[in-house]
Image (cartoon, rainbow, N blue to C red; front, side):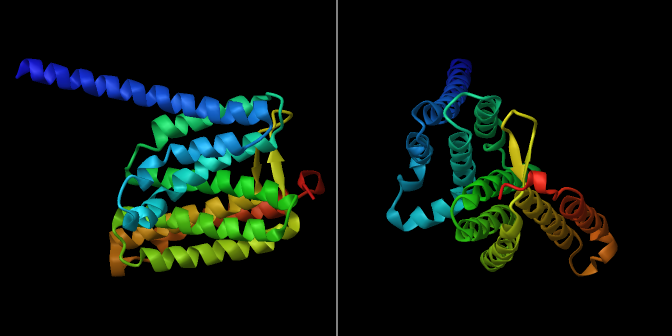
Length: 261
């Protein structure tokens, strides 16, 4: 029995080590290849290949698996597209993207607690929203609208499904429509906040959507905990905080020098 336990622990340690190495390689190669080739195709293909388990089952379960993996797909795709948008010369932003993707794959993505599920959803909104803003600026508003719908649906569904919410599909679709409307409104002033000359950036739209999602998650958690006994006082703090953040962003940080139009 002792030998069996030792072998099992050794296999688990080896499996964990290989998991870390493969995910680290994915983050380096997908973003590195995008920068070196000046083409995002290789990176996107690698992200899709990394999700091979989605299609390793009967085709009847493909749609379910895709929905369950939407947040991860959005994050991986966003990292690659952000690296592509940053140019073909290695800049601080590229190293930050490699590090960020590695942290996502190794430390954040495997977690399944409520707090980490919320972190995963908000990360998808921040990265996906910023990516959509950048590409919408050089294409059409439909890019931001469709991307916002997908972000709202994927993020809300990702959290609700963990709590076995029976209305998760309807609520997720509604959230997607709300996000799409906000994306359409925000397209009139696509604003990017950058950190010096590093190339690291976040879009105002992504921040607003993230704050709204955070507020929804807090309200949903209060409803699950309090039920019919929930009062406004139970959710007043996150609502007021979110309103204050959005007002500060729109009023105080919408100067023309930030606008990418």
